[in-house]
Length: 319
Length: 263
Image 1: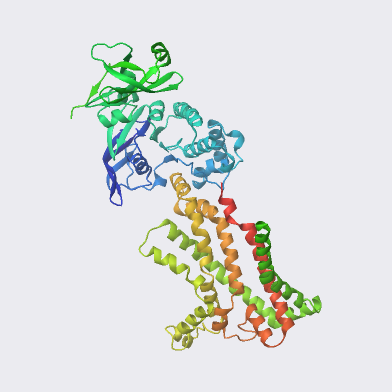
Image 2 (image 1 turned 45 degrees about the vertical axis):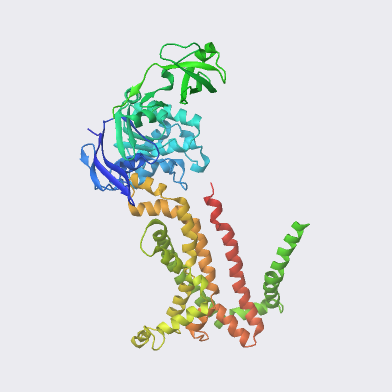
């Protein structure tokens, strides 16, 4: 088994506690997302696993072996950083070969391995370039090849697409998923973007204020969130007193109905397939509703119009 | 109109205060022909002065380069109590008059000084090369540190951490990642250190005792000739120093680190 186990890890920085006794198991070969708002401790947890931060208490197990006191260089992890951490003075080829050359592997082996990896990340033609001559997406693929070169037990990605523009991000997410299917190394990706976590990962670990709120498949987190903070972080949500309603679980009609209440259309946002409607209910409550373009057209919604709304699916958390 | 005023003002100032005096040195040195100038700098005393100057620089510059890199790493990559104070002390030689430095060394190693007893054990510091080297190291200490610190800070720790996760030992991280990313700053610092070491007058003048043909560096030789009414000899030796300075300026342009670090 070469999964990852984190047992009761606590870590603080100058009086601020980043992780409060966190325990989590990452199955062998999985692609897991550490999701959470900034300051939730997700990057710290990743760095503790990598060995770049030393926890105050607790253990880190890689493949069943306790590596808590091992330095990062002896852990067999591959890490990719948000800002690429490319070796600027080395060519793409030398960047990818770095982990192999510090291990003093035979030259023929290095040559073959780097060649394979550059092919895997589709940078074959750019081996002689320097990082400054690459686009952000290419740099990040190079960083990934560099991390994979040492055949790590686990691959750790710290907000890997955070510095890229939206289109490249989307491409790279799909590409990462395919890559993971090919190489099957246990992978953890840190992200604050719930859409990215849901799209890429098979398992999502949701962190908030240094604690784990919920672990589960993306769909579980969305459909049966464990508490308010999971509900409000994974996908948009309306809070109506003690109840929570997803924007797509609101029924909008032009005529009053049993249990419906009056609301005024404050703003309409057209996003292609989806139309976002911001409503002000008669009790002063703001409400966000998502409709399909078709539904919105049928209702002929306009700004300032009066409609009748009724939540058709609500979630209540017991205190 | 204002633009031209600014330009001519700046250029005029530079010409009047820098270019004309230095140009005049060149003119006066070659006034009586190249052969005359060559004779003035190829006599044994002048050659010895040049050799001594280069020897002192050859010791002081590597020492300050190694120290400068270690100091910069300590200041940027570690936290220790008194870091702010150390950071300020590094700048001291820039602010302190070299004469004071010379005097301080004189007090320390001179007769009755804390380390004055060394002379009784046959270790000559004052009026000898060791003292001159110490003075030169003191004077030229801040340059490598000051050039490397901002670059280290800008480069950050990401690359070093990436290298670490890839299996590099601390020494491999330094040699293959840290050092190459600060190399231009180091080169720039070395050039500045060299220029300062070769040109140093005040501090070396005090600790050397200015013994002709023994503890006389090139700047001291210039002064010696000038005082001995051998003005053309002084000019010729000055030209050698000025040529070194010009080579320095050219090297500084070539090594300018700011351009490499900008993405």
